[in-house]
View 1 (tube, one colour):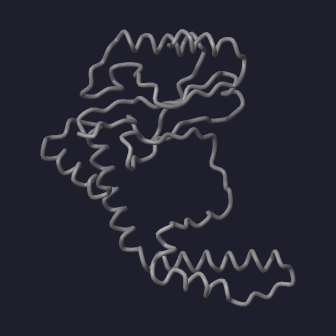
View 2 (cartoon, helix red, strand yellow):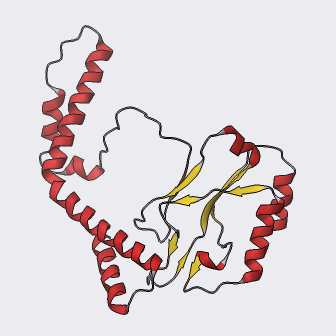
View 3 (cartoon, one colour):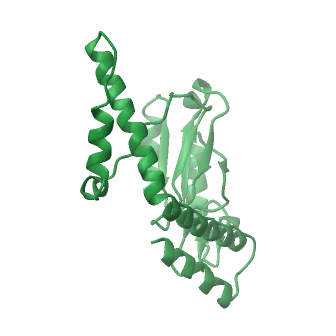
Length: 215
């Protein structure tokens, strides 16, 4: 597989970005409590070298995959970029985010922080069938807006609904969000500890219990 991909990359002089779960590691330090096959790592490293790709350093975490039983750790997910792509951007780096429901950590390729303006509000389908949500939306929408331009009226009405829903969400789900955030912090703390040393059976059971609570 690697030879075919290496040939394909070599035939196209473009700014390459290869990313995802490569299902391989580059050396033994990228596996913990897993079988390390040196020959497979050599094939992967030879592909990266011969295709003139750069393995962008990973920040945020040392590993990207944790088996469900909390015993096995691997760095399988990564971004590989070409020199041409690297020359187009400054200070390219990869950040591993916290896991949610998957056994893999999401990873993002970033150049610099960009301000895209105010964040849009998230609206969940469940809100629309909950008691009180429709009234919040209708009341906010029906607030009188003084603007001679129709697009300005429409924009302001949407903004009113956004702020009203945000306040309603905080009143309705605030405690639940705090509880979930607390559980996620516990999960993340156990994961970071497990990256440094092997957990005892009791510690691993506590970690998995917190994960079940989040799900």
